[in-house]
Length: 206
Ligand code: GAR
Image (cartoon, rainbow, N blue to C red):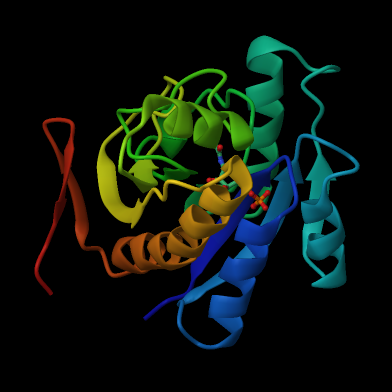
């Protein structure tokens, strides 16, 4: 199987990036991370990308606003002939151009359509989950469209919410599920098993 060229967008610690790199190294993902784009110079993900010898660019939403921000990212991705864009804790709006429609994945640390949308990221998600009293949470991998945390869902994994959870303990449990869900979704994409029909993702038999 031909290797997928991945472009990873991130803003934070980069644990999602590290997990994908680890899976590739173990031979579990037919892919290579060609380029990383960070919205912050000081993101942990930038350090990881450099350590792994991956080309990394910082595109600041403070310096490039609106469409220019997204166009800059798209122009970097184009140079690396990216097959699939992975949003890995990318906390800004990336307007997806025609070229990348159906080729951008996002992971959200809750069960979409709950606890998602603008402002729901990182610990804010888990605080809202705990405040609501729901008994399960989890993560969602979906094709991204041009609305925050929206687009056809590929897969979801659930975790229990415990009575004594803090946002941190719940985040850790959800992140463990994320580390399984994202590689699984990328693998399905690589095998050509995902088909978007009427706003939903069908997983095709092999
Ligand atoms: C992950 O938990 C991811 O689900 C979340 O940010 C974290 C990134 O961690 N994404 C969102 O909240 C997007 N709405 P990382 O920087 O260590 O990979």
